[in-house]
Image (cartoon, rainbow, N blue to C red; front, top):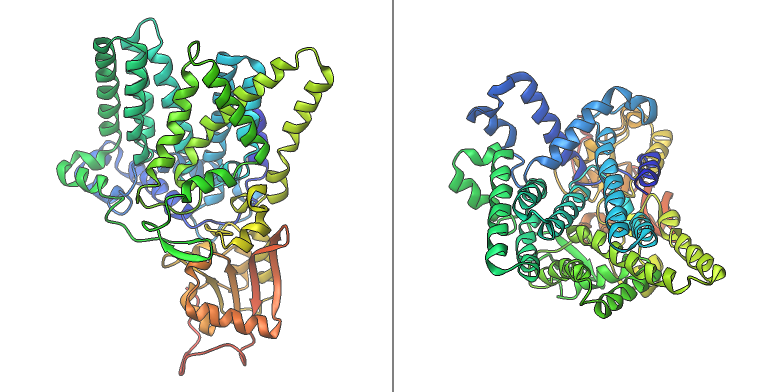
Length: 525
């Protein structure tokens, strides 16, 4: 299953457009290696540590090291399969890292489910994760979320097995080292401690559980500190700042049921709804069977309850006023556990139908059909909604977020702009969430036409507008411009799925474009 995941993901890496966070995660990784190459062992001196991490210390560095490594390794070969990158960040090559991590993750949960419940459960678990459209789509993106999914799941499974080992102490040291990988990816990993503590007390005597958790914690925290040199200096101040990243941060706006909310104010049911509507319904049904099976087998096998607890922990956490946005993204790492429960449920169906060849063929057919969502939505799997809300058209009617990360501004749309635009035309990307996002989205084809995408502030003077439907960030000026476009039927290209447009290209003749007085065309950066 892992090999199949690698093949399908790597073969389709170029599909999604550049997302908001990708350059912000790949560039620091490349900078880490540039600093390391220039300074050698002096990399760990304070001046070099400060230089390397000071503008990207909101997250630990492991994911960015991996992205930087993939970007540098793939850079010489990138023109052969993705064309020249005029930005020099080489995000396309960086995407090889999460694609590989996803393949390992699929293989990991398939192997663990097979070990515990048999091969049918293992194969079903791996397949379920592979065909979850949003999970599969994230595996294409050079960001941190797929890494967290892998390292969180690896640490969870390793910790559970270590508690069950004959020699608990050395096993817990090794499990703690794997926990450090999750800690070095995102802050979420600290919540593995209470989960594993409860598991240890359920399996061991109190004294052995305390000893096991002590060595696990010591190994994990020590390796976490060793792996992030930023914390070696001004440790107290920087440690406090690290824990404050979820407090002292910019507010992100969210569209939810037709209303724009701040991330701390979204209703409590936001994470529960997105968990419910971003996985194919039949897979949810199989997962529910797995939960019921776990209850009936609770005396013989308590491991499914660890998986259930890991899911409920984060859905509950994000229901308490903790900032939550981007649909499922902040709790993406709960889906591997759900896939294992899906495999557990499918294993029951497979066993029940032992004497029915037709029944087993039907089960296989139904599972294969669950790939429809991932296939039909690709490369815009982040916009997938299941039948509980009527798919993507139903989500549009309900006022749910149709696209949130810019992936719908893909090469197809930008290549069409490059073909149509006059040399030196002013083109603006909207909405943009940080300065320079438009420049980083510019492709080689656009650069050859001297069409450098500007940020949203350039909309009033733009000849062309590239827009994606993150309506929570549509400015009044953009809304006014789009109203003008719709009235005059100036659509050029739309990127749509299931009849719902996700991104579009508009041409605004200069005689119609709303221009500030005395506004001069800027030179291309």
